[in-house]
Length: 422
Image 1 (cartoon, rainbow, N blue to C red):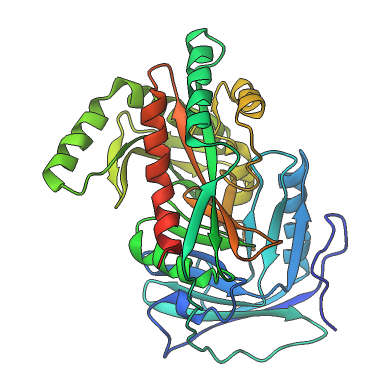
Image 2: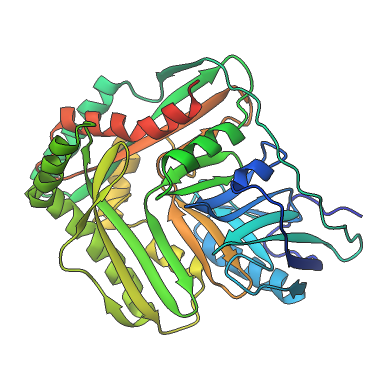
């Protein structure tokens, strides 16, 4: 008997049998083992987990979507039989997840049928199946994705000129005191001559941006530099990014730009809003916290960001997903004050974000896991496999210049554009 694709939030949990065991003779690149473009992935610096299939799945939306997802996961884990020879983060029973930016946007948790994981030089395979139809461990193959071919790009909901006008409108509202900061996003449409095999851009993203978290959940793929929250053995961490400058490719010039970014009052103000929103959201869940007084400059191949790593010691049993729910939406993807910025986004942005800028990541049966923010990403069109929506967003404050923000958004679209290209 096979499992249905989706279990409603209140349905009885399926009884799953889970087995994790060490494997050898595997590729150094986890993405090589993905046999299908319906990939699930969370990889950084070669370590992480990838998966395929759906032993169980929850689709959920609404203002209670995080609570419903956590309740569903608790029921599922309590009913599972798990044999885990490793007991490391990412082994055993694991779900991947991706949540919409707004309450109305779709969200989901997916439990793969097969997971391949790597951590600290050890590689393992996890198989997950219903108790009524146990499956044998798979023989891992190495697969080559189909070529993508030529890609054309077209404006999404707004042209660059129209989006710049929206930024100018937002700056005026900030100057008038309506809001302190608002994050505005834009989309770009990628169109191929043939279906896009998502494994190819995933491989390219992981290779080009090893310090980012390369992710894939239900057609949403990307390489995010921003870790919303990690919970591991009682330690909570969050990497906050806000304040960006484009790299030139000239090392000496880029060092000078990094120094100017670190001194920029506009970018430091934007960053302070983002760090404070994260610290305030995590404080009720931590018995102690370390909030850096000044950010560092994170160097990525295409841009540089002001970054701060916030850390704390867990004070309660909140899961990684529960912490992500408390943090979403942070000032880094919404603005300050949150409610006012969210309403302004709805009023003037002119597009549905879907799962862009929402939490994306994974969680294990103990509640440990990692959730990033779905940035530097694209969403495959479920109706037309030749098309993808690419996304980028910028934090707008009083000192923002519309032309500069448009240039920044173009820089943030580079990772996905390059990953899709020939």
